[in-house]
Image (cartoon, rainbow, N blue to C red; front, side, top):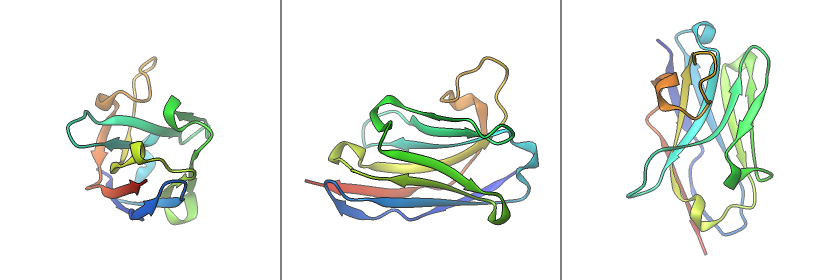
Length: 126
């Protein structure tokens, strides 16, 4: 199973930027998708962005489209999330995940992911 460790979370002002990183160890060869999820206090965990590893297709949740960019560095086994124009509603714990979805399953379905990181906190103040 893949081990995932996130970093890069911080406190920023409204309109600021952050880049989250997720280092994967233990072999991502068994994973076909990696993603970022987030969970705000009192809310369910929601998908933010995903990338299919073999075809490099990316997907984004509507609230972050045009502001966030998911990418990966294969040589360093690292997944990134560049977050620009941050808003207070982006405040949450951000989690990296890896998995192998079944055909037809949407990327944001939690059951697609069998490896999760511990999370990194992002706080955006107005």
